[in-house]
Image (cartoon, rainbow, N blue to C red; front, side, top):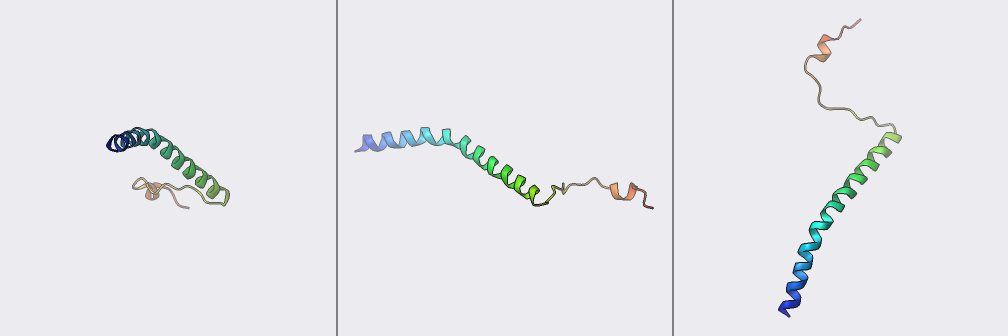
Length: 61
């Protein structure tokens, strides 16, 4: 009984790290697909980070 449980725990410890890369790849694919669909709907990507003073250096007519 203990040997079977020990073997199952060992298999679990070996399999889980191998699957971790797959989960990250799948999550990245879902994010990319979501961004693609949002762009189709008309959304644009905007950077929230702006340089200080860029608005004041532009000349306004």
